[in-house]
Length: 611
Image 1 (cartoon, helix red, strand yellow):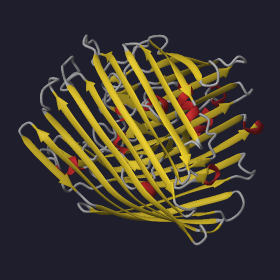
Image 2: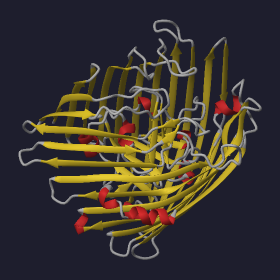
Image 3: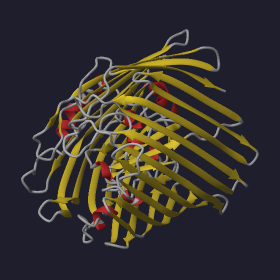
Image 4: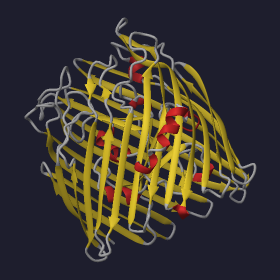
């Protein structure tokens, strides 16, 4: 791994990455920290990047960050999984405005990114590496933290609408402001398309409609006491092609209603040295499936997760913080269909503590421990530590990180009437990385390199011998992530990333040594944007992904591909802007999941207003 890392450094000048220009990070420890306190690898996708790229799907933004691989079943809205550093897609923890949204009714508690469009999302943080000390179950590959906008001072409003290929309409609007003790905002987004055939070679288009709303309200009763309320809702309606066997044209329909809620009380004591946060969060995912539109649902799932969280932060001196907390959650799921129903629920109680210490100027060290008590399999204890050292006030950062992760068996894997196994143990991981960040020429060049390794044991898979789930697998992932951001002049920004991910089966069976499915070893993304003197902004993104396999036996290959996208925007006065883009410029034919189609060359244009 070290030899590979050294050889890849030479590529960096040709493979710029997403700029990490935000100084404050919240995902590493669950509290706000300056970047030079954090020893973990984190990428920030900020509001300006989201707007400039004009992406519709969140996953298309994630795909340009190092260490990220994804697969999508066909058209926009199709089932989509995100893998971090070669981990399973079910081992990615996802937060929306501070609420865990992994679906308790899914086979592996994974999160389907297919319905998560950019809408009114303003910031995304991607933490790579196991981090169960802070987040508990599922944070084996890492964490994707999605955030809507913070209310504007005074008053602010934005709206946009665009139209393009396959009769696609994408519209969104938000308004926010502050008055007295209250600050808040609301937003709504609407997307619909005739789509494409999800099945390769199909002739029937699979349409999709998505409505998303978000709201937040903060009441600051005093400098020490405040109340936070947040909500997020998605309704999605998807035509999809049958996946029983090879994907083929069919009349199947799926509908989703996702409810996300947060209510938190914040209290500062001891002149601000002790801050307390107590919150209740709620997730509900209702998924209904229809063989024919217009009939009653043929089968469906409902997953809910009610959580209570307490977090305290004690900072007696500037050089030390203690973060501690307690969490209780109760995930449950219900299933109906095919003449039967089933339901199950569990309780998880967790305590954790971590210390952040700065023993001398330039060095920050974090270490912590967590214990989770699961009502089915008992307890799981995890440890983690990281360090960041800068000898020159942040121009150079040297990072070290060790993290342990675990993933509790899902309710489906434990209790499904046909394949459940109540004796399952949690999946476990140990993750190591070492890296550095270097800023040159006053921040006009930002370079980052990270080498990593993760070993996972007791990974759950379906056992064809017993026709149930078992702790069958061991996997290993290692590799290198490299990024650079260049701003040679104020008008030009060049960013990009390269990652090498060697993710393999280490279970000792007939597939031992094989590459894990749908995880390409190599991926490169390069973006460039230039603002002309008369206001026009033009840009392009090139993404190249290497070959991978669609199955564990490595007998079904997914060929690598290269995609080129162009974009432009032009302000017309202070409040109005027109914009447009071309995706897949060269009409590349490719697949991220065997048998499923992808969009060819497509163009879109729109208008944006802001106040």
